[in-house]
Length: 136
Image (tube, rainbow, N blue to C red; front, side, top):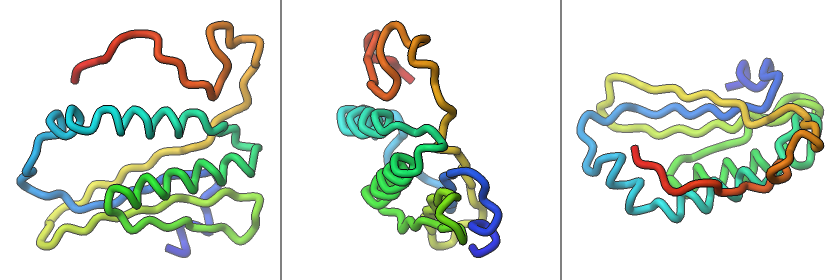
């Protein structure tokens, strides 16, 4: 772990979990059963400004992502750099007994500054629904 936080130049989310061969419920069934909760949580995440230079809100993003992982049964942690100038990486892991493979997901949770004048329909960081639900 020390190698990861030593070199992480930008906020990242890293998830590592073992692949379970047989799922008890399909992804679609889970999404349908939890759609309101998923969309509410995602909307709250999108409402937190994520401009890379905004250290306070980047840390709010990291904390919110950590809490999202905790709600899903992961044991997440913030991997801190040696200086406060570098935002933490959010690391979470699921372990499945007997798993033979692993999946790694990696994503940045920071963004670049926006030109507020270019946002004519709605302001940035104010999630706005524009059409009906989508099916997968």
